Image 1 (tube, rainbow, N blue to C red):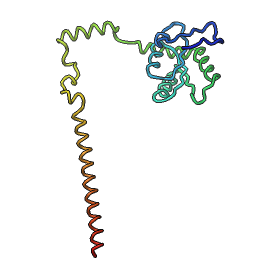
Image 2 (image 1 turned 120 degrees about the vertical axis):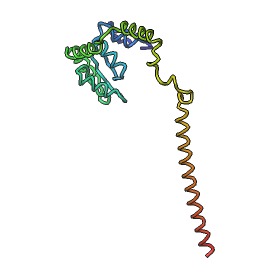
Image 3 (image 1 turned 45 degrees about the vertical axis):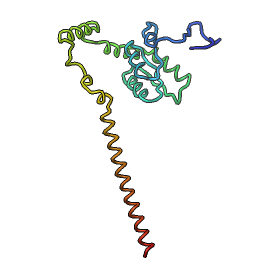
Image 4 (image 1 turned 45 degrees about the horizontal axis):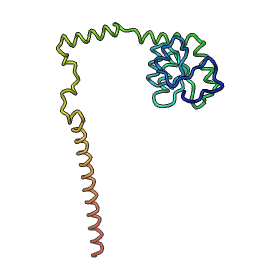
Length: 191
C-alpha cells in the first residue's frame, strides 16, 4: 500500500509499500493466500503449504485455480460475482477447515521430496563437468550454429522468398486475366 494510512485501519494490520510475496508466504503465521492464480504464486503457495482463496481473471489463471481446487488446497471465487461476503466466506473456509491446510502441506511435501539435496546435486554436476573436461557433450547445439542460423535469418529468408513467389504468381495471374479481358472488349468494339 502506498498512500495515506486509512483512519479505519485496525491495530493488527500493517501497511507496507512492498513485501516479497515468497517471504510473506513463508512466514509461519500466514494462514491463507488470496491469489489470482498465476503460475508463480501457485508454485510459491504449494512450496510453503499455504491454502488459496483464488480469484482467477484470465489466461491460465482459471485452469491453475481449478487444479488447486481439485487437489483440495483452494477455493475458487468467481470475479464476476465477487462480493465481500463471498470472499470472507471463502477465506474463513480455507482458514478454519483443516483439510485445506492438510492438502496444501501434502502438495508441499511432494514438491520438497527430492532424491538428493540441492547442494549435493550442484557438487555432483560440478565434479561431473570437471571429470569430463567441460562436458562438451551436454552443451546445446546452438553453440555449433552460424550467426545467421542462430538468429533464424535462413528461415526468415526462405519464408520471404515463398511470400514473394506467391505474390509474383498472383500478380502475373491478375495481369494475364486483365489482358485477356481487355482484348475481348477491343474485339467486340471492332465488330
